[in-house]
Image (cartoon, rainbow, N blue to C red):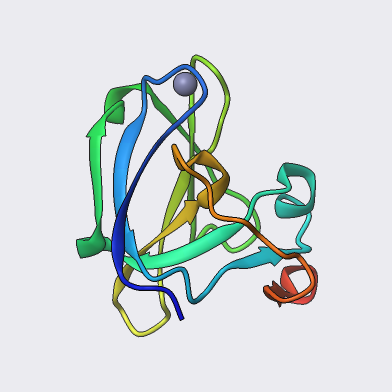
Length: 120
Ligand SMILES: [Zn+2]
């Protein structure tokens, strides 16, 4: 297992910049109607381990299905670098798009988790 460390990242144009603290132990993709189009790799972190440095006012909100997740994407470049939601126990979580890290981790799609979002 990797060590807990800080990862900086951004959207494509750089308006949205963030730091996420994670050990990358929960890398996942998802087959729901949105995620399969987006193709992102997620890592969920507690909201306290995510810091948005810039771009809050440049984010557009998208809701679908149960509307429990705030899908936020940059209104300039269209990249969703993170989403906000809850873990179902009332804890605020952030789903970070690790492909948006400045130094993205190597991802083996055969070993990461696969969320069956299509059947939620
Ligand atoms: Zn952008």
